[in-house]
Length: 216
Image (cartoon, rainbow, N blue to C red; front, top):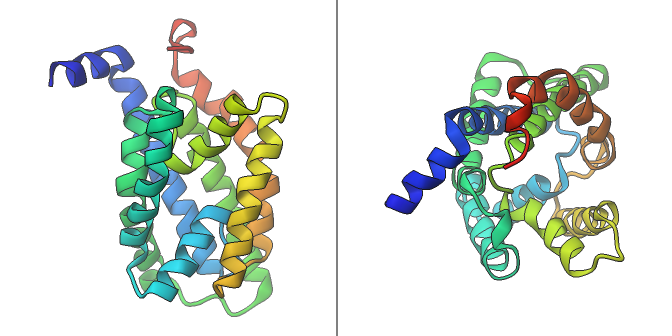
């Protein structure tokens, strides 16, 4: 308990709160992509497809999947574990489900491609803000995000970019083979989020911290 208290004293309340809001925005973005029906980010899309095949609720299946990957994170990437790891692994699935059910209750199912593409664009902005807020505090990577970080550490000759492409590509293939949706949303989240995240890093997330708070 003392170690946990020391950890939270080290990271500070601001980092923890910003990370929480980051995961909330990410969850909102994922729910918007799902509502649009044009594909989701590779990992979420894969989990959605596999959970449908297994007949297990998405949030529960996401936790099971994260636990499996978390074992690898413990063995090969302990330095990437933090409060953000736990929050993302255990809570995001339920927050996504909450927002998705709320959106379905408040809004009619999009019936034109124009509206669906517009929802994808909104989802991209919301998700980009979420990822920026989740990453900037540097308080732990999600189990899935840690995979490409671990690969980069173990295989330094291969850049993070290509390691991330590799893990995302595997998820997309599994999603497709499991009957999941692979479409515009998948492409946007896999290749188009970078500039959006960078924009929010510069104009929002980094401005929430003093210069001395940037690196733990």
